[in-house]
Image (cartoon, rainbow, N blue to C red; front, top):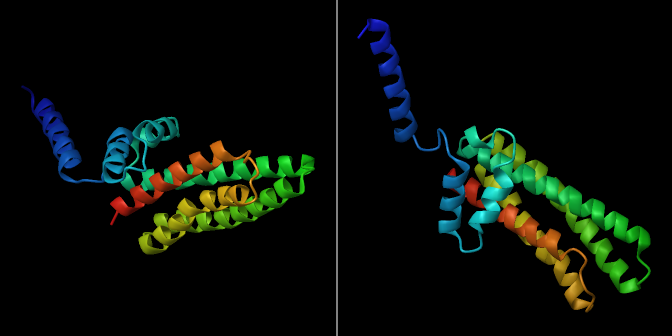
Length: 179
């Protein structure tokens, strides 16, 4: 073997060892989702993988960036739910439904603030702050749904709130894995 070939083989061996010996350097979506689902019965592995895999660069992200991605996906879903609420409010005629939708709108607006803060906190290594804001994110969708239940009005946001609960729980689990 030529010396250059030996150098290349050594470099590949070092990279492989580096990858396996340093947890969190690279985390596959599947492994991170499996670890999160194994750690919490509330996390659906298939949902986790389906949501994260299509996200740009998720396949090469480390654990920290998977947490950022999950929190960003939660923010995106919250924005979509908030937009849906605004559309429903424009057409709501029932007083009870309108009251519930207005409550959800406030919940989602607060949630967006918490998520922006949590994303920055994860990026800056302030994990305690991130966990606090992500914990609020996990609870927010049920707060919205409770309003509909209390006034015995069918919720038009059940799917959105279910997805929000799931993705925010994943974001919190990924952040917890960081320490």
